[in-house]
Image (cartoon, rainbow, N blue to C red; front, side, top):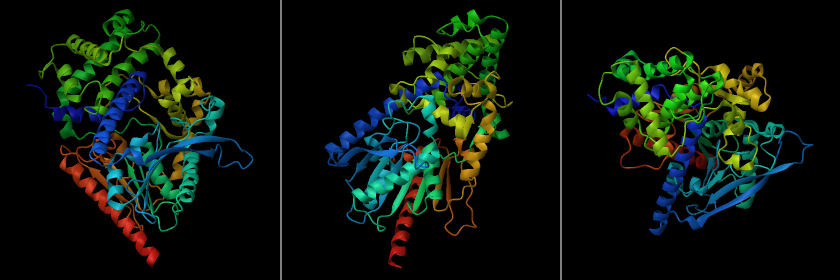
Amino acid sequence: MLMSPIRCIILLLLVNFVYSGRVLRKIKEHVRKIQYEKAKKNVLMSAVNGHKPMSEVRDGKIHQPLDHFDSQNDETFPQRFFVNEAYWERPHGPVFLFIGGEGPISEFNVLAGHHVDMAEEHGALLVALEHRFYGESINKDGLETENLGDLSSQQALADVAEFHQYISDRFDLSDKNTWISFGGSYAGALSAWLRGKFPHLVYGAVASSAPVKAKLDFSTFNKVKISSLVLILVVVVVVVVAFAAVEAALFAGNATEVGKDFGCCEIPEDLEDQIEVMQSLADIVMGTVEYNEEGGILTIEEICKIMTNETETYDSETEAYDRLIKLVQIYRATGEEPCLDASHKQTIQDLSDTNLDSAYNGERQWYYQTCTEFGFFQTCEDASCPFSRMLTLQAQTDLCPEVFNIPQHSLPGHIAFTNKYYGGDHPDTDRVLYVNGDIDPWRELSVLEEDLDKEDKDMTILIKGTAHCADMNPGGAADRPALKQARKAIERKVAKWLKEAAWKLVG
């Protein structure tokens, strides 16, 4: 009997990790393109029906200080933003700020999403700001290693503060225009930190799937209940056995055979290349989990069928190995990939690329931030990990000195500073709404419990059965009841903030 999709979802989400190997980066870029086209189509259809007109959207660039904390430095960089005035009730309507994260923003960040739906309801001005050094918000030499020192979350928050003043001046805003910030994932953390560091600028903040706690080795987040393990035992066994079989073949000196079996771009003779192979294999599973039916190359249901072969038994280690080969073949055919990435040298070249075209995928910049601020290295040294023990913290942090000349021994200090500066998973914030899905592993680094000692306490929402940033999407008929309820709760909280802010002005 085929394992149900729900059981497969439980398994795969529990073992999800987000170390961006090259395969995962390709899947991510594929999904980004699919989602962009989908959003574009929906917005155009809405415009035809006289709703959410694109003609109301403007983009622009503000010249920001390259270093907000050095008054002697007069260098600047262009920072992109978008504005949508379609719903704004002049002159005192609120301002909804969408904060960009580790990638480019587009006009659809002020045209589609749950925050846009709420902006329409409350007559808000919509603005979106791209993160420094991502997308188009970067100088020509910005990706050079010596210039990446100006890339940090602290500088990014100062950018938002400057942008707040710019928009206030441009639209003649006053304290009667209440600002609410929104962000998801890293940008969700920025939304929360903005409220904590600049409470006079935003009255409240929504922080979706926000990993506010930095962590060097993020390997211990797979907290699985025994009852869940019973349900998913068969798929766990197949995945574990398959990866163990690949490891065994490599350790036995059969790298040529492995390279041919999985269609590797080159034979993984060296240990570093063998680690790349194991990373690529894991990335196929992880990319499927992270994006599932949102535009990924495969779906969770498809990967479960492949790995279980529509049965609840497997005959041998060889069969599990063969199923993994089939999975790779389908991934390559569907994604039109000529071969499977297996070169550590190529990974170094990709992360070392300082061409501005590379700024758009953001991988070099984000890896720099993991080395200097956050860690977030997803390893497989924990006993609960079903993949290869070759995916170690050492293997991932080796890239910091190799690519950026950042010593490995400095990483723990960087992570400790970030947590001290922002407060870790007990940030010094109030009027922040922390929203997480209960099957999103990133929730382990977010805020999950309300602090009842705070006067204007933070609020938390944990959504049953949803994953990363699901609440940020526009509502749909097929959404889970828990997700619909969560969006209603977010709407109530935002409405309450706006009402409170108005009362305080009157008082």
